[in-house]
Amino acid sequence: MDEVRAALAIARKDLLTLSRYKWSMFGMVFTPLYQGVIPAFLFGTAFAVGGRVVGLESAIGTDNLSGFIFMGGVMSGLIATSFWFIAMSLRWEMDMGTLEPTWLTPTSHDTILIGRMLQGVVVFLAGQLILFAIGIAFFDLHFSANILFALPAMLIAVVAMLGVAFLLAGIVLVIREANFFIDCTNFLFGVASGVSFPITFLPGLLQPLALLLPTTYAMDLLRQQAIGARPLFDPALEYAGLIVTTLLVFPFGRWMFARAERSIRVRGTLGQY
Image 1 (cartoon, rainbow, N blue to C red):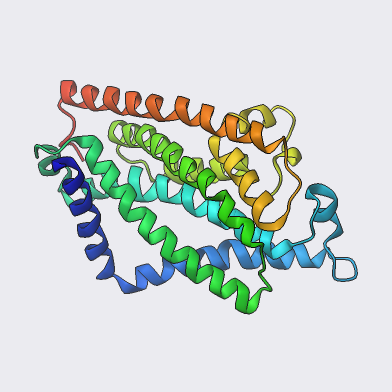
Image 2: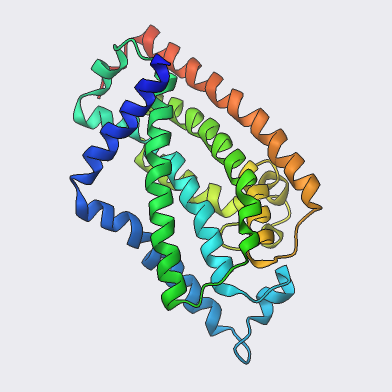
């Protein structure tokens, strides 16, 4: 219970700090809109035939372009939360000069990252609600109420992405100046998960790699339930793939984080900027 209270306190502290930077919060919502949603929507409608996106329909079984884009935005937001709010938060602590004193507290270092995950999930959910409202008002966003059946897949994906965040946090501790690394890997992870286009469009050598990511299965299950997209595999197999990859990614990420933590403790580099 002490660790639970510590995680909640970390999340509350970070939310309080973030609330002091209102323009930054504004950007977190509208940056995905003008960088991702609007360009993808305009590009997709440019190839519409008689108002129907026939290419998308032939690829996934539905021409619901706005639903396809916004559902991809949901998974893209979850991935970005893990990469930036959790893993990259350690670099921000270095910038502020607070990482070393934070590391010396009796709180488990895993708890620090879990607290950041809680904060990130709150911001992620609030941002998605605003984006959905904008999509419904201006982009003809519509989806089935069956989207609720995708919640178990999304919850499992949150656990999987926490494991990925542990792995990335360990890398951040070791290489320290990690902005470029996080930015590139965030983009590549999203592409391989199918947030922008079906993974069947990836080059043949990359498709097996995409199937190793839990977010690939969660993304497909979400689109199946929300917009009736054609599944890559039988949904039962996709749930099995999601669970198996999560069971592999989460302990591996924690193990790599522990290895990185031990390495910087032995070398005495935690306090190095």
